[in-house]
Length: 244
Image 1 (spheres, one colour):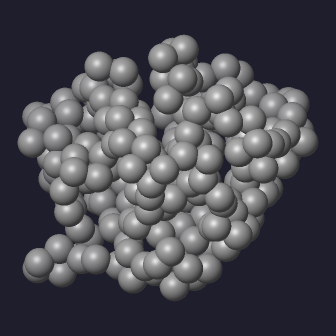
Image 2 (cartoon, helix red, strand yellow):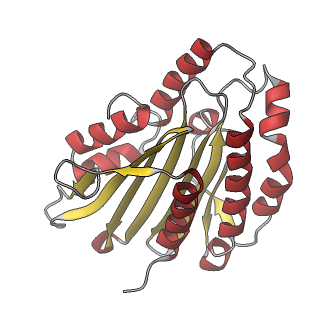
């Protein structure tokens, strides 16, 4: 069976990050992916996805989550590459999804400080992405994604988040690479922080708690319904940095 477009985009991006930083995968005690996600729905039996975890300096952790359920016409792949909690370098994230007949994606660098308060940081870290962002936003075949203002407030104004037809989705890889290359350069340059390390750590903890909150992002309720509350909570704790 051929690899889907969302999985191709996710795999290419993951391979690029792992290779660039020389990351090492952490497996489950019995081997295999860090977590295997199994369906809790009567109409879908057995494993429906997996979570992989990678480590290696200078990143803190990289987490992927893939959930593929043909019976539900769901093909979803998420990457979160977390920088160190005391670092001012943003986190990198990519979601690539096909649900039913439509595609969707989410691409962003998650800021580590308040951008309005620290315009120098914003100009260094995010302003260089403005041209790429505007070009991506102009792709024909994109439509607004169902993302609330509260969800947008946890991310950056340079977030690309859309539904897409197949033609538009096939063009996204170019812009993912542009964001990724810029982020990798930021990691190498070690962005100077305008705030203390303790402030960075406190904000990061609060921001990740919000990003992966069931109250803020309703998709988690659907994930819990599919893989079970216990697995959903374990996955969110991992992404929030509360356990490993």
